[in-house]
Image (cartoon, rainbow, N blue to C red; front, top):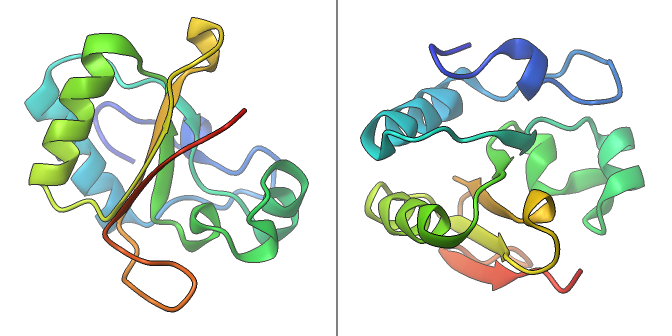
Length: 127
């Protein structure tokens, strides 16, 4: 999909083949180029059924829109990522920076503001 992100790592994990929107991935690629360090993908596109199994957001969470990604970064890289994401206009930023290092991530999305989903917005994950 982009020079630094493959279809395999971005596709819905259930095997349905759903991918993020190309425009969204172009923005993620630009972010990656500006940061100049790897952004391993934990999760990107999710079909509604798979999302309902792995997320409290159910059938219609941000990942089902093709405009959301979870990137496995922590520490200084997470801070740099959040700063740059805010500068670039990402509207949703979720942080999980506790627990084992391999379980830490930053969620990014470009969703519009709407009832029940305020944007711009930042949040942290409890577990």
